[in-house]
Length: 126
Image 1 (cartoon, rainbow, N blue to C red):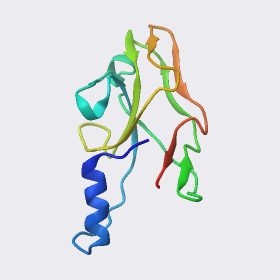
Image 2 (tube, rainbow, N blue to C red; image 1 turned 180 degrees about the vertical axis):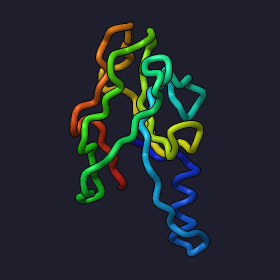
Image 3 (spheres, rainbow, N blue to C red; image 1 turned 45 degrees about the vertical axis):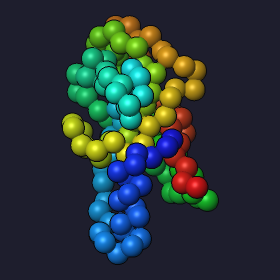
Image 4 (cartoon, one colour; image 1 turned 135 degrees about the vertical axis):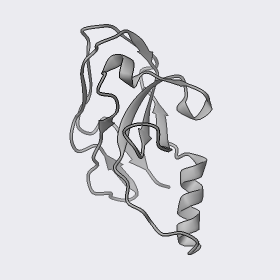
């Protein structure tokens, strides 16, 4: 997953001593289109509860993956999902990272289960 420029700038500020490192609670969001360039968030169309909290295993070599399934439940509405994103808030907030779905766009219809199993979502820092 690439990181947003705001997030990268924030890391640089911490390294330069211009800012303190603040812990976040990461949330997983679903998008139709690239969230960094105008894609539309469809998370609440699929699950009225909205974004789901995501947790990661201990980083190793700059890599980590979700250590608990991210479950949006049974789809409540129809939507096309082509990207997954990580935000620092359950609503609004700042885009942290994003990635296109490996299989391309997925047409989600009412009644479909929407879930990322353990290890499906990975983040790498080079």
